Amino acid sequence: MSTSDVERLRRLAAYEAIFTSDDFSVGAWDDRTSRKDGVIEMPSFRYSSAMNRFVDEMYRLDWVVSFDWPQWAASPEGRRLLSDPEAIGSASAEDLARIITTIVREERLAEGALADAFERGVLTAIARRAGELARER
Image 1 (spheres, one colour):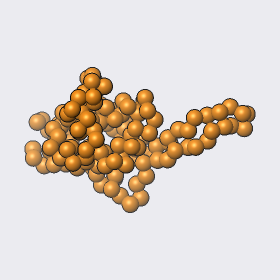
Image 2 (image 1 turned 180 degrees about the vertical axis):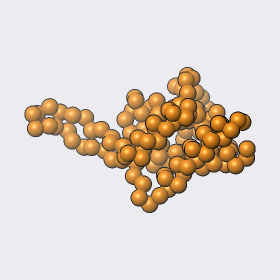
Image 3 (image 1 turned 180 degrees about the horizontal axis):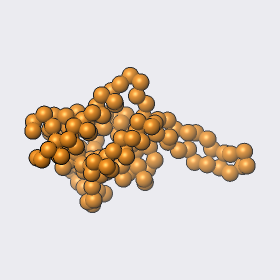
């Protein structure tokens, strides 16, 4: 793994401390269903600035990659890694990119997917694994 790859892992790993901080918030649902003008709005998830920075940085660091993520997510390996934070403990850097990509892309189709991944411990497990992989280099 090149130095830049190790740095990418370290930058991702730094989110473990952020995600586990007592003052971290993923965000919250905005439950407004109607405006003053009578227009009905669907509830939406408002991500915290820290979560928005995470997503932006995942793009900048090329953790969001181009591949057939829906097919991978439906595969036994994809289902295992997306649903079991403990399984992420043996994931490769490429697996981490697949997981991150899938979660970020799912957010476009199912609002709150990123928050759900955080709540289930998947994002913290990804950051933890990135730290382990960086230390192995």
